[in-house]
Each structure stands twice: as structure tokens, then as C-alpha cells.
Image 1: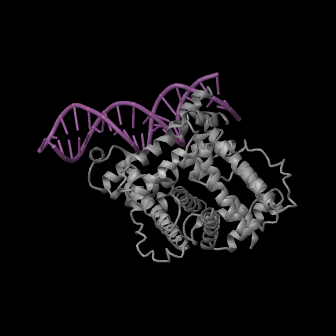
Image 2 (image 1 turned 90 degrees about the vertical axis):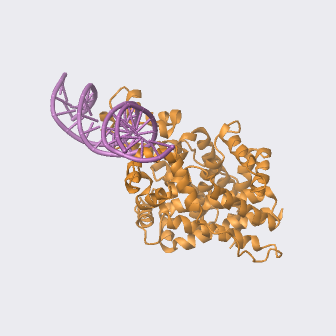
Image 3 (image 1 turned 30 degrees about the vertical axis):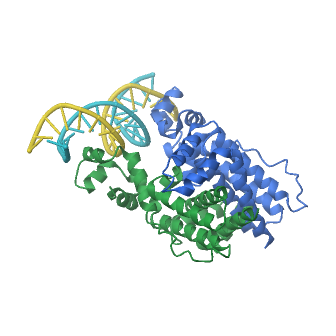
Length: 204
Length: 204
DNA sequence: ACCTGAACACCGTTCAAGT
DNA sequence: ACCTGAACACCGTTCAAGT
């Protein structure tokens, strides 16, 4: 039932419940349980359904021979995931709670690792890089939720800046940069940071 | 109420409920609501209580002058957080769902940023490094849960290895290394990777 | 003032009864 | 075979009534 994904998008995981979904689909809760084993399975499906929006890396002709194209591929993957999370912020809690292992999640993982291996990565580093990048994007989405006009991000900054500057001088000092830098800059900066680390590991 | 933290440790966030806590404390649920506003506040307290176990970086005399001691301090912080999560695996879902902003979380953040600034980091990079490292440790704990003898980690590897090797050749191929490398090696490898990235950013 | 047993509202899941 | 209204079990929260 992809009606579940739409409902989660609309009202979030907390407000979501089976009666509401049944009502939305013009059926009863008991009928839902004939299609899925329970709410957990439904949420796992929602996660995988959202991940299914990520497009394959088909256009990846950015110099596999040059040995640096992996960076473009990894960046593309990270941006794709970020875009999906930005489009479906309400699935974030589901993604953070556990590792997605649905068919779409597996296909993405497989394709990303394959791309890195094609660029000369050993399997082990390729798998690690994929996991680390995914964790970064998800983690970043949690810390800096929503779009630039989102209230939560500014609320967090205000919270940090409202702290006692004597008790937390550096936290307050760093908070000023949170307002200065756009969320996009912050994200790309951290991403480059991780890619640099992968680059070094690859050379060994 | 730190009885809540003990109860979450024992039975996990899903099994935890107010009646159980009330029973444990030989009181009624209504009385609980005289001390906290609700379950959410209680869970936020549990998170901060657990973070309170992290020791200050007092022994950080690893060459602030050399300009490379930041790496030891950052590694220590990451290992401290990892140790706490390993000791309290049941609080993981709470930590992943939202950014902790309790007093202990703030104190740790402040101290870490301060240490990096002392080692020459600009505020902005110091804050970003702290956040990235914390995200990595939490993300890694979700992917590789529990201790080496934990069932979940091996179950995940078995799941990956049991996949159709033709449909997911690289995922299955990489899974073999999951069994080979200990969880500790995997963690340290990814951590070094991120620290290398921070190192490069610092030089600019 | 402080506490509590009992209730209220709600939600995941199941079942006896319909068609 | 497939569906459903109603119930069951449970949990967060509140309240009228005790002391």
C-alpha cells in the first residue's frame, strides 16, 4: 500500500495510525491486516518506497578512466539521498531508527558499491564509503531539518545563541556561523570533508 | 527521575511505559506527571542522563603545541561516545531521532569545540567536526549494533550474504568482509577516514 | 499540599459474524 | 474467499476524591 507513504508524508509518523489509513483507503483496519502483517512492516515499506524515488547513476560518464570520477558518483548519490529526504522529511525518523534493507535500499547500495568498485575501490572500502556517506546525509538531515525557510533550523540556532555565553562560549560562538552559512553550504562542506577522507583511504 | 534511565536500559524504549515506571518506583502514573510534563520529557532526560556518563577531556595533554593533538582529542571523544552507546544500546533510537540539547549534551559539545579551537580550529570547522563525528558514531552504532557477540550484527551479515549473488554481486561480495573485519576495526577505519577529511579542511 | 484509583481517549490488533 | 463492525488489550494522560 503506497497510500501509507502518502499519509506519512502528510501527517508524519507520530500522527499516523492504522484507523486513519483505513479511512483514507475507504476500508477497515482489519482489511489492512490482510495485506500487511502490521504497522512495522508498513513503515518498512514506506521507507523503501521513498528510497525508490532515487534514480540510477546512469549518466555516470564522468571519467571512470581518470580515477577521480568516483567522487562525482558519490556526490551524486549523496545529493540524491538528500533530495529525497528533503522531499519526504517525515520519513526521517524511520530511516534513522534502523538500516533499510528493502529491495530499493539494496538496489541503491548495490549500484553505489558497484560504481566505486568500477573506479578501482576494493569491496571493503566501497561498502564502508557507501555506509558512511548514507549515515552522513541522514545524520545531517536530522541536525538541519527541512528547507532553509524551515522553522526548526532557525529555532535550533536561536536556542544555541540564547544560551549563556559565559557557560558555553564556543557553542554560542559557533552558532553565529550557523546563521551565516546556508544549510546547503554546511552540507556540502561536510560532504567534501568525508570525501577527502575516502580519497586518502583509497590511495593506500 | 533516573529510574527511567535504568528502566529503558533494561527493557528498551518500545517496552517502556509509564505504568511500568510508576510500578517500579512504587507510585502511581499520576504522580509521575507531577515531576515531568510527559513521556517525551522523560525520554529527553534519559538521553541526557546517559550522555552525562562521558568524562571530561581533562587528560588531554597530547601536544596542543604540535598542532596534531586535536586528533587524539577527537578520537577520545568519539570512543567515549561509542562506549556509552555500547553500554546503553537501548537509548540509541532516542539519540538518532533528534539532536540532544540537554545540559550534558551541551557541556560535551562545548568542551569538544573548545578543545578543537584550542588546537587552532576556526569555530565553524570545530562545530562541524563535532557534529560530523557525533553523527558518525551514532550512525555506526545503528548499523553495527551491540557487541561483537551480538546477534543483530551477524544476522545482518547473514542477510546480506544470503542475497542472490547475481542480483547483488557487490553487496554480497562486501558482506564477506563484514565477517572478516571486527566491528572495532570497521569503526576505527571509518573514524580515521573522517579525521583525514577534517585534517584536510583544517589545512585550508 | 500531595497523592492515588479509576477513568478517559486513543491506537494496534484480532475475531465473530456477515456477504 | 473476502470483508467488516465491534471488541480486546494496552498505554499516555487527566481528574475527582481521598489523606
